[in-house]
Length: 202
Image 1 (cartoon, helix red, strand yellow):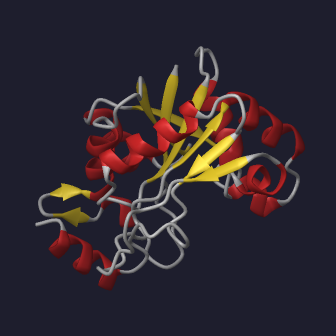
Image 2: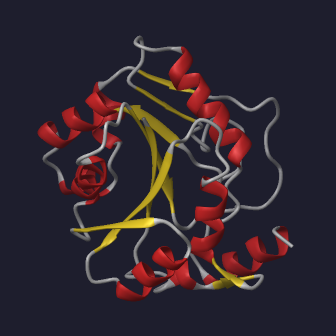
C-alpha cells in the first residue's frame, strides 16, 4: 500500500490557523486534501495532526479523510501512528501549507521512487534544487526508512521534520524539472503569501 500523509497543525508561529484560511471559498487544507486524492498510485490519504486541533480535525473528517491525532512536536511519531494497522510499503509526505500542490508532479516523484526499488530509500522533488516551485514539495520513502528514522532520530529537529534523518543517512534521489520555475512562491507562511497563492489558484 502507498499512503499519502498530509501533516498539518493550527499552532503556526508566523501565521496561526493558516491551514484553515480561506482560499477561493475553501480552507487551505481542503485544497491540499483534494489534490492529494488525485495523485496517481496513492491508495490512501490520511492527515497527521496534533491531538488538540479539534477545528482542524472536524474539517478533515468532513472532507472524507481520516485524521491521525498525535504529539504536536513529534511529527515523526504521528507518521508512525498513521501507518499502524495498515499494510504500508511506501509513504508520501505532504504538508498542509501547500494548497497549490501539483498531483502530476507528485505522481512523477512516486514513480521515480518505485521505479528505483530497492536501490533507494527516499525520493523527493527538492524545490530548492530541482527547478520546481516552493509549494509543490513531495517526499516519498519506504516503510523501512520510516521505521529506521523513528528508531534512530533523537534530535528534536529530526523528529519535527520527519525526513531529515533519512536524507542524512539513507540512499536518496531527486526528481528534476525540465525548466526552472520563474513564478511566485506557492507555499504559505504569511498572510501576504496567502494572497499571492490565492491569486495564482484562481
